[in-house]
Length: 99
Image (cartoon, rainbow, N blue to C red):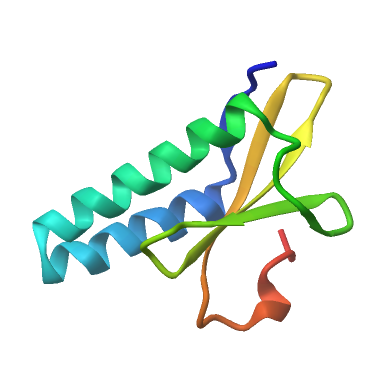
């Protein structure tokens, strides 16, 4: 079953901050990062239960070439995956699920 993706405002801010950081270094890196996020979100939407539940009802998966996890949960009522964080691996993991 296919789900739609909805970004929490905090996750969208994290995404924009990461793209800005990569843009300061390289346009190509920023484009590849954005493409990696979009591809992974498409995978999540196609099979939302594919990835492991890591805390309570949150699921997460990592990007292959970038040090980020996508943290999300599933809302069956509206058939959506809610992206709660685009989480960099070096951030404090205690803050990962406080959304």
